[in-house]
Image 1 (cartoon, rainbow, N blue to C red):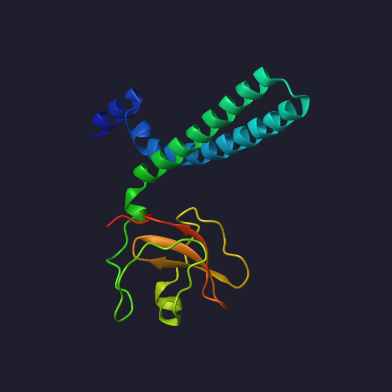
Image 2 (spheres, rainbow, N blue to C red; image 1 turned 30 degrees about the vertical axis):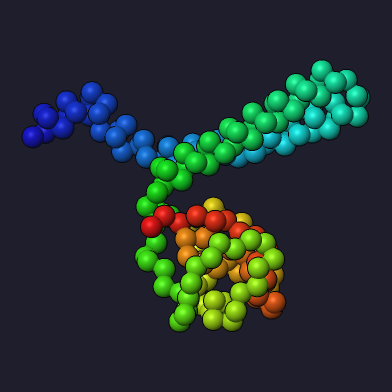
Length: 164
């Protein structure tokens, strides 16, 4: 048994199998930060090109901004696919008489929808920004929305956020 373990360790099989998931998570978070930084730099370059007024350079900078946005979206999609189980939640059961309709910014929720039962408390797990003062992330069907708790109005909406 000892000889087998020594041979496996010497071949380097055990370490990569254990280390890959940890590195992949850290790498994806670092990639997203890097992509966001790249996007900000590309947007800054576009603003500078627009100030100078060279049409060719403006076109190139717009293309770079578009490519950076696409890359950021792809990394986010890949992250969500890799962490699919994180975004699976138990079946949603709305308040009595509940009927789902997609919502957008400005929609006003009734009080039953704002109860603690529907709050998303672990927003960091879902890579959602912290809610502002007086706001909460609320699960509504498979959507997650940031709601002003005083008025009940939707401030931010992410439709289709959770998988069934």
